[in-house]
Length: 260
Image (cartoon, rainbow, N blue to C red; front, top):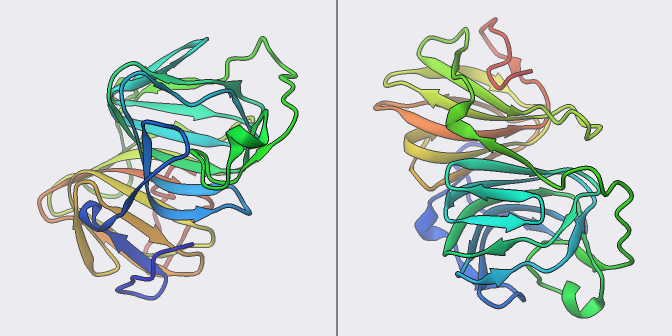
């Protein structure tokens, strides 16, 4: 399900204030979704957890990323909190606890298994959750890759005033994708390009224009495969980007701006 709103063909922008919050089956947790597909187990949007709430045991069948805006989650192997990106690969098995009020941006790319139908539910915390037997085939492997975002070096790209931190290159997942944290200084622009796979953007700070539409901090942009667009800012922006394939430039010749 994708909310029907677009300025340019294949480009969608969503202000935080326009998203609808709904309670999850897990008490004390709520979701504000931009995109959700139960069949594919895909989700993009916000997740909110009250203090002293827990996800319950579950196993990821594919990559999932969580960017923590406030609070944090703890599991048996560690803690991810404000300003961190948590990554779960296929096979990651855990239960995560929020000891304080928590807000994150969540992106799921595959279904999740819970140990019982009662826990899985129809509209549960993880889109595309199913009941099934959970076997952790690699108990010695951490269920999380927790990355302190501002601890990763900010590197310049070939585009003037645009810098990037590649946080997750999907190594070990079988996919060739990128999750990057990017800084666009005032008056910078990523010129027109065409996508070949989905491109998702979360505006962490500042204001951003994609496909002719301006959105401020807290907003999302979704760019469909085959869409042609540009990205620019007037007074600066910090963004989180998930790119599922290299882009093709329309009238430029830079290296891929998202880290391929």
